[in-house]
Image (cartoon, rainbow, N blue to C red; front, side):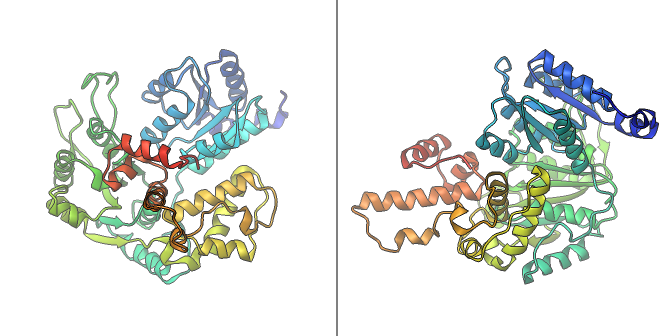
Length: 461
């Protein structure tokens, strides 16, 4: 592959590109070497790994700006999807571009929902691959100073009030506790608060407390030293240190154990953290923003959440409305998501007909804005026809429609109809996370899996 001489002689372009490192994860040596050559010719630094396990070890020791990750790796303990989940959980700031020789629309949608920045198929087109890597790095590069309300889309009264609240609270260092159902955009509000603060040019670090196993959450937040526990082959900075000088967003803080709540409270009170296995405290300057979809006042009454930690976090409370309470924002949200995903996938923008918007407004949106976002992404990927009509939109009828005629043949049929609808709503509310849905329903996860199968509910998007 040849390049124009002016590119090869432009040292500023080469120097800028060399500052960016791509980790190639593929079990085929030939593909790793081919991609290495192409990327290095373009000025990127390259790291390589032959398996998901090796990739996670490499990420623990190397600074990486983007991961190129193969989905099908039969000789790896972790396949591509499992590796993607680990990378997005442990290194949310690193974009992942998935590559596959067995690509389907369902696979692509699943990868994107798990957090992949892009999805490209083998045999790889070099220009398409380079474009995907550059776009992933560019879109994940921290913005210098985000607009305080630029991330909050909507013209309804609740959304305008929310932007005003961000503008008022953002410039302070006051702790904020964001309340809202799953999918209402709590992390976007936290990002807007960071963008409106004096820390906007520093790091924003997010951690989902519900997604990190109990035995790893302390290390995730406070870091660990080499040898602190089995598998700790290298020292690692925790989220508090990564966010030093900036903002730390603790999502789903209500899912923390009481033991970790005590450790978090101590860190907030003292402004210091102690890595697992370490001997001394380290000073950190971090603004903490927390979020929850739970009623913490009720959790306090049940002795599941510490009152003293609640008062430390709840200096300025934010309440995010569910989408069903500001349905008038659906057209502007659809336009926003359509533009976003059309640019990402190189597809022409979709337009929706009036009956399509009527169908969207008639839905009760248990998954809130996230559910709408996922729907629009799916339409951009799968629908080539424009405009999109109501029949193209894969939404079930409103939940109360199952009772409209009340024509069930037996008590069992009626009970199963109610159970099926309830389970579907909870799965949508938690974006398909069976563990969280089971907890919300007050049942064991394995039992919920059995009921999902018995009721004929699909877990696919």
